[in-house]
Length: 181
Ligand SMILES: [Zn+2]
Image (cartoon, rainbow, N blue to C red; front, side, top):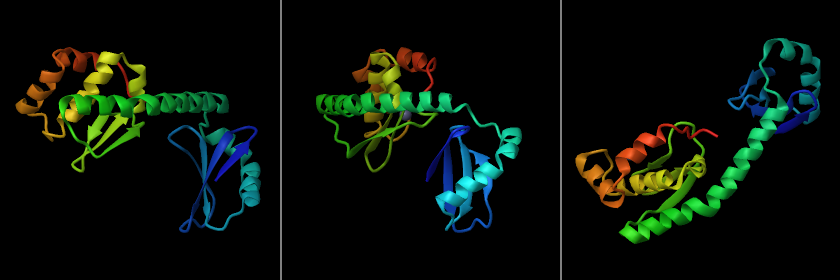
């Protein structure tokens, strides 16, 4: 459940059967997070928040809610653009070079641009929408080549190279960007 608070913005409330009392922490996105016993009502959670306001202000580094909202908006827009583009681009290259995959997933991991799993699911990071097209295509071709080679062997790179002659330069340039949103 999410509580909208005037001071702290969106507060994440996690219900846990193991929690005996209410604990405050900071989520990875910088939001205030409360873990509460399973049957805590919204009313009660709000009341605890209010009575702990001073402690939270002093002890927890809650990010500015405006900053949170700006980042959420940006992520949403990126996801929207990615949805309308990446699956189709993947399909295009798969058809062009005769690959068959099972599923295309969109991810927003902070560390990788893409991945290919043994069950033939290809994940592409929505952050790809922020990099130049040749680099984006390189990532797609890289993941497609993993359908035939689940490693980074010579044979794998030869296959990537047969579809993207500049793959080495693209791999290098990609390091200047970060997949995190
Ligand atoms: Zn790889």
